[in-house]
Image 1: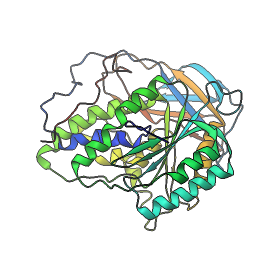
Image 2: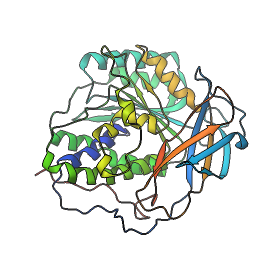
Image 3: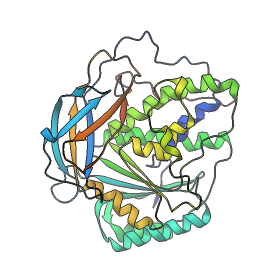
Image 4: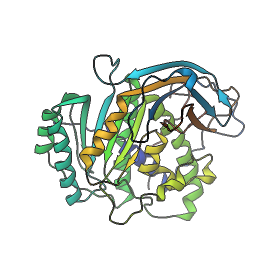
Length: 361
């Protein structure tokens, strides 16, 4: 394993957003009601279609799909059935497994180690190139992508799984800044990425300050737009994998699944791991104690999927949230893909506002 100051993990992205909760910087939001309509690049979607047992369905055609953007159907401008594994994969889908040392307990970390090693030993030749990230408050380490399951297992067996829970806003700052470089790097890399995050997720609140709430929400909403766009551009699908919860709060996140449309309707619940997973087209898997089986289920999404694009209608102001639905004209099938996007530029070079460095003093 090699140390990496900027680990390949999506979990720190959330914290980069949350640093704004205590921000007092006097920076005006980039998005204003008077802004002219933005040029919107074509929207690319990776779509997984399964039966009710979760088995991917091959052989569908463009005519079977309908894309709804804020309800009106859109013309599909390109369509391809993709195979993410094997010699026909071009480029292959990459799996990134992240063991979260921020929000787990020692006991859960050791259970996760056992379960992940079990999966890796049983799959000495992994179906996808896989990297393994271990992230704590004080250190991060990462393996290079490989299909050698035994090599990844040996790295995990020898790793020290430290535990550094976040208690202060300064720790949130350190937690969040690791992700900025990750997102930029992943956007530049071709292909689809499946990010499997092992852990319960992160807390909703790090203290309250009503005086800062309105200002905080403006900054957070601007950065949510950045996050959503960059994840879409990087083609990252997120999966939340954890053990069965002793107290079942597993459905609480569902009230936040609808995308935030303005600073006024923003809630920190919009930024929880489970919400981000569903919005990216992934799954929440926390009803089993067999984490190794959950990992297998996540990677199954790479077997067969569909890539399609459409051109959004012009004239939408920057920062407007668009609800997305993809339907398949076949009974009994389940469709998963991104659930929305924000109109506007697709990159910092095109004018998309990056995250700001906020002062907590």
